[in-house]
Amino acid sequence: QVELVESGGDLVQPGGSLRLSCAAVGSSFPLYVMSWYRQAPGSQRELVATISAGGGATYADSAKGRFSISRDNAWNTAYLQMNSLTPEDTAVYYCNAKMPRVNSPDYWGQGTQVTVSS
Image (cartoon, rainbow, N blue to C red; front, side, top):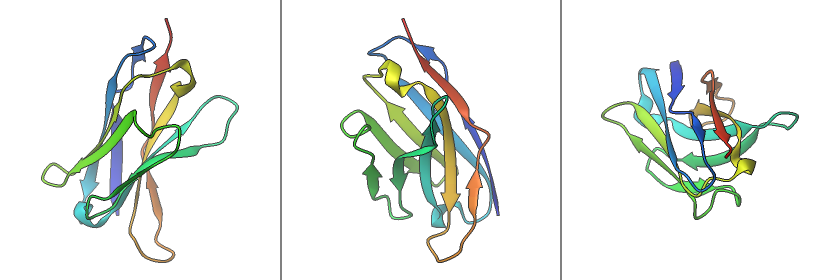
């Protein structure tokens, strides 16, 4: 079991950057697949980026070339570096942890608000 706490959300101007952090409390963090999702008002939650236990990363098309997911297993923390932000990136961003096996539970953080506006 793991508890997740996101931080780093803020109001930023278009073209700006933010780094989100997801601190995990619990055991076996290095074994979890870590992901970032986001949910804009009136929209469904969507996957933004995923990083495997081995460090392999995948991205949604909307994030490719602008966002970078990473993890620091020594600090039990996952990150999402977001560059070239646009108003369309405005959403609540959620961290997710899941073991890479069938029927493993999803663990979610409480979310952090990112607002991109001039």
